[in-house]
Length: 107
Image 1: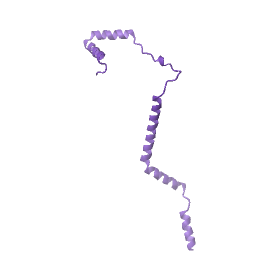
Image 2: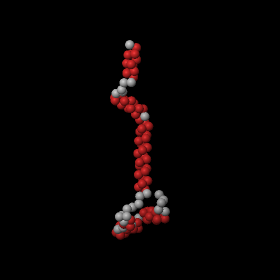
Image 3: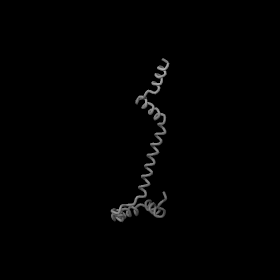
């Protein structure tokens, strides 16, 4: 009889663990480490963005694209004449244009 009880005890301890119990254990481990997992996900996304930006920064234009096609934009002659007329008619604007010509980076 003692051997039967011991064997029953061994059977209970070596019994297979149900899939639900395994899932609960895995879930509890994930919940405990959720902050670390979240940090890893954010860092991986950041790494992906930096890697992609470095690829795009070093990219050369295709041979099929004409680099010379990016010409200087044309300004309409009528618009230039109108701006000059407005500059001549207002002395405050004239001084603003003169100071901007002398130091274009001043505020």
